[in-house]
Image (cartoon, rainbow, N blue to C red; front, side, top):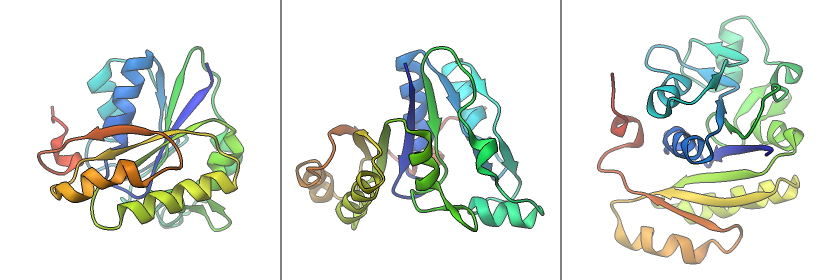
Length: 193
């Protein structure tokens, strides 16, 4: 099975928890190519802890919790596309992108362009709050414009019922994968060791 990319409309929306669920369901390996921020449990550590599935090492581990291009610059490095090639793997691989689709990885490289270069299908994660319909449709259009196949999209639930109820019917591009209901923010909802 080829790789599946989990990407999002922005950061802090539950991509890691969705990736963990997908990794477990597919009995897959997990890979987060670029990790920005090392002070707390990393996304790779979270997925390993939640799933017990194999996790491939990150290509870049950057200390500053910021946009990857800024984190890299602060460490005196530049993220190189060659180091982001999908690593050899057996069986399914879930790849979790950092931040949103348009996050810069390097001065001349956006995450969406790296996703297109991987030539693998994607699942888009979005929050359900004011602006979600717009962000989701713009993101789906951007993926389509770069010929990235979209398997579907998922949303984390909103405390605003009308927003949550309208999102699936409104996003006619890409199949809606369902919603994840949070009692608090996705990052805080993850159990800590």
